[in-house]
Image (cartoon, rainbow, N blue to C red; front, side):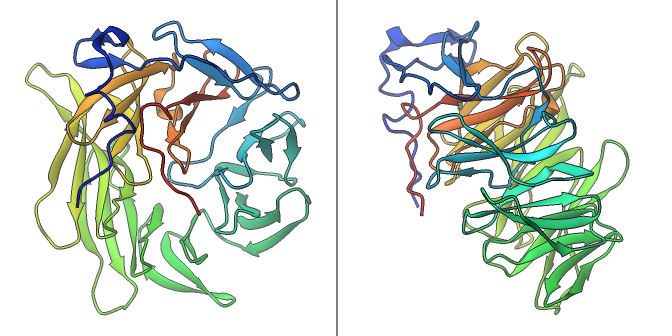
Length: 364
């Protein structure tokens, strides 16, 4: 099945005069006209020092603000809002920002918020988050929260609303008021898009881990998919294979990062693409384009990368001393990329437009 590449085939038809070449990378062109920023909120337009692209800072670096974990839905295109966590009230709490006017609203109170757990539910009308060992839900704009489950250290929502979680080191599925155990010795999990199973991770040591798959039908034991210095797993669009980053050491001893693929059918791991030392990455909705945060000290940038053919474009500089926390992600319609950086003070949230580079995706 052919993949959509870009609105203008991304690189192939952009006039060469608009592109600044940097090795194998290309600097993304800036749209000719920038829309006026809203008059409220903390939105601030910044000209990137590397690419001269326009970057919008969404939250003030006077406070600490964090994006959610990779793979969680945190932007609603329909409601035009973004979820994030911030300590502007004196302690970390879930907030939403209106992407039309910049208005901020606190979603709920939290005592021990796991800010990487914050996510939208499938209706995009409520937020879910982990506070201590409790999963809470809160309707957006109302501030009332409800306890959904307890004794949890990690959770993810499936596309049908089912809750998969880690409880006492086990992968469990919420069924009624109880939990159905699926696998043991797990630290994180990611539901399969079709609901047939769940991907989960086991840590081997500080730097190495394993990715396993367990089916919900209970007829088979968990299957090992990948092992080693691996991270950032995503389900590919076929729903039966995963994409992830693997660190590899080249002949000169330099540690690089590659995007790899692995199916559930037992076939060998597949090389997808080399990267510019990605510390973390994310695919867009149809996995035709990736966005990554480079951990290169010389070029600490946010990079856009085509899946086929493999080619990169520098979007902007993230300049973060902690590239693992930059967490670049696409909006559901692939029109913008959001990322986190502390280079102006406290961690803040930034946005850069890619709508002239990446084919927009339809959203429900």
